[in-house]
Amino acid sequence: MRPTSLPLLLAGALALAGTAHADDAPLFVPQWLGAQYTFVDQHQGRVHSPYAGAMSLHPQGDTERSHTFGAYFGVALPWHLAFYFDVEMFRGEGVSGATGLGGLTNGDVIRAGVAGLGRGAYVARRYLQWSLPLGVDSETVERSQDHLPGTQATRRLDVKLGKLAVNDDFDRNRYANGTRIQFMNWGLFNATSWDFAADTRGYTDGLMLAWVNPTWTLRYGVYRMPYEANGQRLESDLFHARGEQLQLSLHPQPDGWVLRLLAFRNIARMGNYRDALAQALATGTTPDVHADDAPGRRKFGFVVNGELPLADGGDTGLFARAGWNDGHTESFVFTEVDRTASFGFQLSGVHWGRSADHLGMGFALNALSPAHRDYLEAGGSGFVLGDGKLNYAHEEIFELYYSYAPFAHLTLSPDFQWIRHPGYNRDRGPAAFAGLRAHVEF
Image (tube, rainbow, N blue to C red; front, side, top):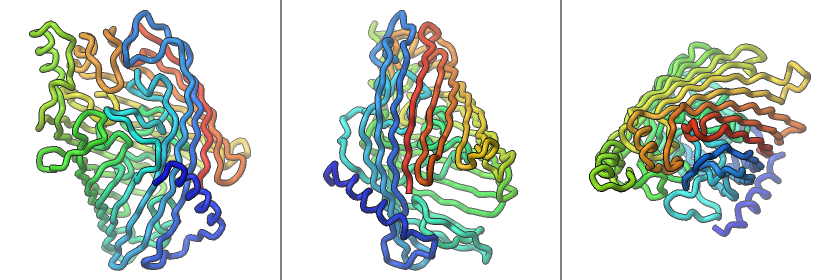
C-alpha cells in the first residue's frame, strides 16, 4: 500500500459517516466501523543535565510532532463469527527520540525499534472473532472500532484469533486508557510494569479467550513475543517463546465500580541483568544485557486496576493501578519499569456547561528492580534508558489535560506533564512537557 493511500481511504470513509447507523450488520458485507486522525505537538523544556548518555532526554529541550491515521473495518459471518481488519499509519517523532524516561510522554509515538520501520500504511489488526451466547439476555452494541453494530449476549464465550493488540482486552480502564483522548503519558494509560507481548508498533499474533458474565469476566491470552527487545520480528514457536496473561474482572453493577486482577508471564530470548553485570566485571567492559540474550528466560508480574464512577452517569470518576514484575530479565517490549503505581480522576465538563468536555489529572510513580538499577548505575543501557551512569530515585510523573470538544467528532486537548527524576536519575531534571493534541474520529 502506498504511503498516500491511507489518507485517501480515510477521506472516502469519512464521507460515509452520515450514512452509518447502529443497525445489525448484514452477513458477508464489509462494514466501515470508524476512522481517526490524531495530531500531537509536544515541547520538552530544558533539563538540568550534569551528564548524559545516548538514551537521555535532550538537555537543551526538544519539540516534535506526531500524526496517526487509522481506518477500521469488519464483516459479520455466519455461526456468530466476525472478521476485523484495521489499517494505520504513523508519521513524526517523539521528543528526545522517545527515550530517556520510563513513562514516555506521547502514547501515540512508535519508537524506532532495532530496525528502521517504514513510514507507509500497515495492517494493525487482522483477526477472527467468535462469540458463543450462553444465555438469552442481550445488550446493544453500537458501531465503533472493532465492534460491528447489533446485539450480543451478556453471558457468552469470546474467542479472538489473529493479529491483535494485547491491551485491547487486558488492563483497560474507563478513565485512563485512550491515549488519543485521555492521558498521553505511558504511565497513566497502562500499567508500565506489564511488559505485554507486542512488536515495535504495539501488535502481535495470538489467541484470546474470554468467559463473559454480567458481574465478572475471566480472560486468558497467549501471544507471540518479539525475537529481541523492542523488535519488529516475532518468534514463531509458542512452545519456546510466548507472552501469557490471565485477568479476572469484577463488575457487580453495569455502571458501577470495576476491579481487574491481572497476572502475566513472558518466555523469550531475554538477557539477565545480574549475568550481564558479572560478564562486564569479568571482562572490564560496560554491561550489555542485550548481548546476554538467551532463549527460555522468564519474566512474571501482576497488576491491580480499579475504576470508581462518582457522578454524572459515570462521566466523573477515579482510577488507580499498581503493578510489579520480578525485574531479573531485561525490559523487553513496553518500557523500562519494574514497579508502578498510578491514580487520578476524570471530571465531566457538565459542571461548567460543557457536557462533552473532560478534565483529567493523574499521578504515577515508577521504580526499578535492584538488578535493573545496578545495571544502569554501571553504565548499561536498555531500549529507552541509559544516562551513562545513575544516581537512583523513583521516577515521579504528573499530568493534567483538558479535552475540549468544539463540535461532534473533534477534540482539542492542551496537555501538561511534569516529571521529577527522569529516567530514575536524581542528578537530572526535572523535566516539563507542554503539548496540544487534536483528535478527529468518526
